[in-house]
Amino acid sequence: MKTKYSPVQIEELKQNPYINNCSSIYISFTDNAKKKAIKLSEKGFTARQIFTGFKLPDYIINSAIPTRSLCAWKKVVRIRWIEWFTLVKKWRSRWFVVKKTDTSCMSPEEYTKFLETEIQYIKKENEVLKWLKKNVPSKAERFEIIYELSTNNCITTLCSIAKVSLSGYYAYKIRLESGNIKENREKKDFEVIREIYLKSRKKAGYRKVTMELRNSGRRINHKKVYRLTKKYDCLSRIRRKSPYRNIMKTNLQHSTYKNILNRKFTTWSQFQKLWTDITYLKFKWYHLYLSVVKDIISGEILSSYVSGNLSMDIIWKTLSQLESYKNSNKLDFTGSIIHSDQWVHYTHPSFSSWIKKMWFIQSMSRRWNCLDNAPTESFFWHLKDEVDISHCSNLDEVKKYIGKYIHHYNNTRPQWNKKKMTPVEYRNHLLSQMGNQTVSF
Image 1 (tube, rainbow, N blue to C red):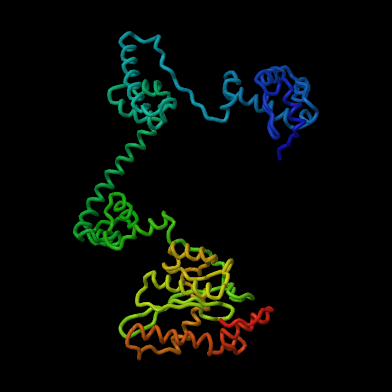
Image 2 (tube, rainbow, N blue to C red; image 1 turned 135 degrees about the vertical axis):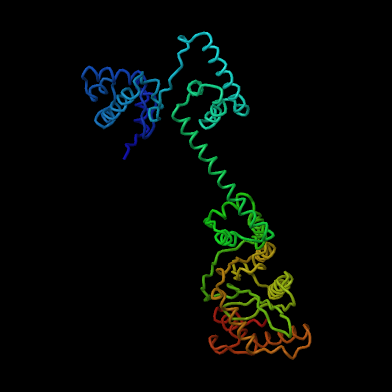
């Protein structure tokens, strides 16, 4: 663990002429201090004696800093074989020695050839540096330039001009040529895949293509077939993923919300937790859809609407009934939770904005889990058991019949777990227990 220095100690250390910079966990020494320490060490002085001569405080001299610092400075000088102070910031990087071409021993013809090669390399390098003003091209880019000029020029000369190693260039050349061989092999395999793809009128997937190849005697792995079809854009044109789903995600539309309730179906205050859901009703040869909002504590159905389709109107009518119920009874839904499943109606941004205007907190069930929405599912089961809409002749009669049943469910149908009371009676019972007068809605 590193020692932390106090602000007073930092100010004291910064006044020392042998210290370049200092922070709460780090001390850097000047170049003169490092050179002087190495010379004194060669004469036989210990690290503690050297740092005592630098007039440093006792908490520095008695620590491990003198020994560690002196060993690090010696290591830099021993590894580099040159003056240490020129490489003190780069001592961790790997170095290789580039052999420079000796032009003094060249004949005039050889020197002219060397200059021509250097000019060609500089021209190529300047083409790469058009959009780079200060930086130098990477090694891969320099290797590419050398590979282009290697047919008419000496490779050793090009490597010395580009300041790269000869072994590094040959390793790059082997990788490049092996990559070209692999690319040519894959193109031949793709031509066979493309024939099968076109015969199927662009409907064959990678599995079908793999089976056709095996029937014809060519064994190619299905992963390679999928990679090549994806690389050359020959994927099957049927059953493709819808691009609109990704667009909705990027636009942050149809977002889901956390399951705040998490099956906590008990509460002690009125209208604190509401449930909403949609179910279907079989009517003759087609389906009708019923949307409801239910209060969890009393089990009362606060609003409902029957529709012949699943457009967003079924949600707007249900919410408008809930809002009129709220205004007529002067209720406050601030902080209340409305829970639903992850149907597209409830993830719609306009539904979320309407819920926020009514000061609800939105909660959603987990995907494909009806148990999280059990209170409304229970009501739908009772409704489908007790209601028979087969005798109705049109949609208006169904709406009236469902409305009568919901009125019966709220006012005249007692429930066992509500102390044998109807939902409205149980609601008034709870209000009276809370010290409020019984209110008739």
